[in-house]
Amino acid sequence: MDSFIDILPKVELHLHIEGTLEPETVFQLAQKNNVTLSHASVEDLRSAYQFENLQQFLDLYYQACAVLVTQDDFYQMTMAFLTRVHQDNLVHLELFVDPQSHTDRGVAYEVVINGIWQAMKEAQENWGMTSKIIVCVLRHLSPEMGMEMLDQTLEYLKQHPTAPIVGIGLDSSEKNRPPNLFQDIFAKARDHGLKAVSHAGEEGPPSYITESLDLLKVHRVDHGVRCLEDMDLVKRLSQLRMPLTVCPNSNIRLCVFDKMEDHTLKVLLEEHDLCVTINSDDPAYFGGYIGENYKNVANALKLSKEQLVKLAKNGIEASFLTEEEKGTLY
Ligand code: ES4
Ligand code: ZN
Image 1 (cartoon, protein in one colour):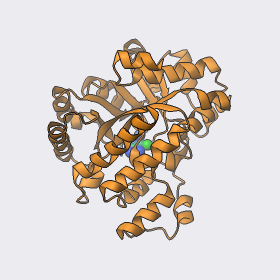
Image 2: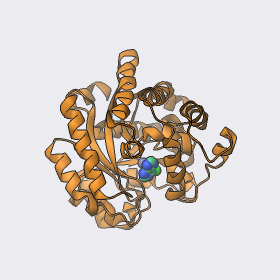
Image 3: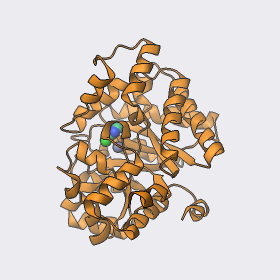
Image 4: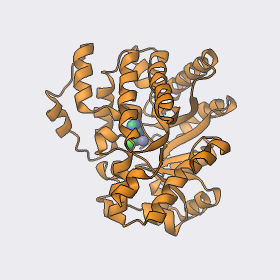
């Protein structure tokens, strides 16, 4: 089954580009940019990757973000990631970036996007891999700060009309930060033609998924696994054919489920006929890139080849590609 997964063309829709920084790169960039880290060595940092919840992970993730300073740093990080997932036969990617975790430290918005975009262009030229950017609002910060980030995005798009930014997302600490706090930002983003996605129902309650649908008018729900606590919601997600970007390794590493055998992905896919997709979230932190996520969940839940193909096709369907572009991937 692993070799079948290796050759299966895959799409990734839930990937935080900052979550691809491997500990070796964190140390290398820290040294180059004179950034002080609170861990003594690569091994020390890697051994700290044992999390009991989302917040413990985010504390380390934001600390590591501080090593990214120049446009070339963002380019190198993205290029290293794209090179890695090209080996997994990734054919299309819609990546998340958290501009606020960089602009808050004095890094210019365009430095972040220019660096990522350059790597994306090379991946398309070299391998035909297509990719897009979704800028995320950090929900632990104020809605005003999120609106500022959206305004920077709209200004960047005005200056760079061919930029691959296609959507806005909502990420970071979910508990006690309901989507309704951010509805003005999403309304404005929509008015400017951006698509919408939101992390919901990972650690937060199913009502955050409902709010994401009703108030943020999202096109996809990121994670969404806690929908199973509300059967009316599950029915609605099924009727809407609303995609869920599920991240198996992440869910185990952040203790959303105790072990992979307990993961509800197969129930969501087969019993409730939801548009489930497989994604890696923060692969450097959660023990695996897209291929490993497919393999781990396939082995633990004994998924068939047909089910794996269905999951991969759901990824194409749930993407923000045009119908014509999707047709070339199916
Ligand atoms: C994240 Cl797993 C997860 N959840 C919410 N926000 C995030 N940012 C990066 N990874
Ligand atoms: Zn995520």
